[in-house]
Image 1 (cartoon, helix red, strand yellow):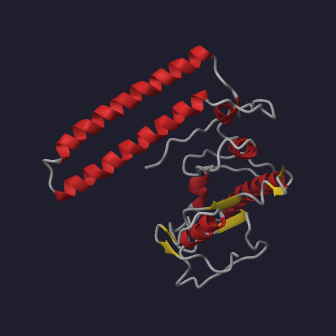
Image 2 (tube, one colour):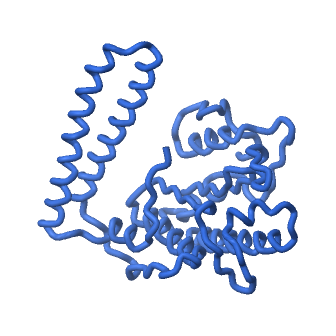
Amino acid sequence: VLIPCEDRASNVFRKLFLTGSSDEIDAQLRRLALGQSIMDTVADQSRGIRRRLGREDRERMDQYLTAVREVERRMAGAAEWEERPKPEAPVPMPVDPPESSAFLEKTRLMYQMARLAFETDSTRSVTLLLDGVNSPAIKVEGTAVTDGYHNLSHHGRNESKLRQLKAIDRAHLQLLGELLTEMKARPEGESTLLENTSVIFGSNLGDANKHTTDNMPVLLAGGPFRHGRHLAFDRGANQPLARMYVSVLQQMGIETETFASGTGTMPGLV
C-alpha cells in the first residue's frame, strides 16, 4: 500500500523546524489520542471476529491487524515528534511552485529538505517518490515538452517523445548531481554527509515503453562503496536488486544476510 506522500516542501519544512504554540501542540496530541483509541477499538473487535474465521480469512485478518499495529506505532511516533524540540532552521522556508508544471523545481526543493533533514539529524531515512505517472507536461529549460512524463515514457520509439524524455531525465540527473555535490560539501565528524549516507536513485521499470521489470537502472552514491564504475551483470540471469539492499544494510551496521527476495550481497560494491 502506497504511504500517503507529503508533496509540499513548505509542509516538510514546518515539520522539521517549526514548533507550534502549546495550544496547537495540545490540540494535535488530542487528535492523535483519539485516533489511538479508535485503533484500540478496531483491534479488539477484530480479535473477536478472528476466532470465527477459516484459515485463509484468518491469514487475511492477521495482515489487517498487522497494518493496524503499524498505524498505532506511527501515531505514537507522531505524538513524540510533536513534543520534540526542533532545530533552528538554517535556511528560510521554501516557496512552493504555484504551477504543477514546475515539477523539477518541486523536486529540487524536496532534495533540499531531504539534505536538511539529514544535516539536522531529524531522521535517518528519507524516501522520495518522483511521481512520473501523475506529472503534467514538465517545464524543462531549452526543450519544449508537450506531454506528461508517463505518456512520454510509452514513446514507441517516436523521435519527438524520446527527445523530450531525454531532456527530462537529463534535468533530473542534474538535480541529483547538485544534491550529491551539496552533501559532499557538508562536513560531518571526520568525513562528509555524503560519505555517511547511501543515496539510491532508480526506477521501478527497466523499459517503461514495454513495462519490463528486469535490468532496472540504479545509481548508488555515497557510503563506503566502490564508486565511479558501472556494474553490468548477465542480462538474462541478472543479480537480484534486493542484494544491493543487503549490501547497504550491512554497511550501515545492520547484521543481515537477506532482504526480501535477496540472499547475500551484490558483488562488486565493496
